[in-house]
Length: 166
Image (tube, rainbow, N blue to C red):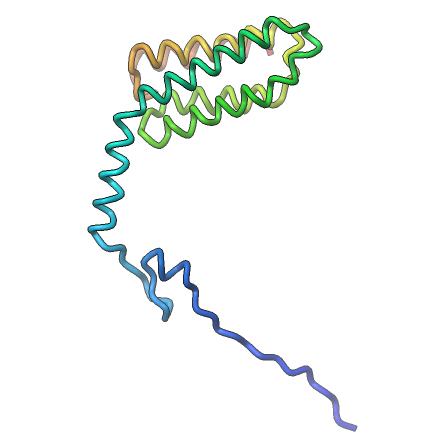
């Protein structure tokens, strides 16, 4: 008796996504056309001019949601946590894209913090308010980097609120 060995066929498919991203069909390293890079950089530069207006709108949305949340009964506040987290994440993404790493830090911190709480405790409200306050200061002072002396102070303020009320 002969053993039947399964027949295996191997298909080497063309990785079209890799080719679009500058790779080659044979698997070698690719190169993205410098004109494409220049066009992308021009678009990003133009969009960076809109950053202050976009981040201002996000902060206004965040303040509106937060004021609405604070006005709710404490046992109903968790319903707004996801919306606040989404706005904080949007702030993080915008700030990170355009090099505002201090605002990115606070957006990420608020996003991560608020998803783990139900906003029913006074201490939680204080920590969220601290995040929102420092974001407003970072925006109004046009602080870009965490290493700025005021940026360091703002980070310490949030860290102190978290340490004290957690």
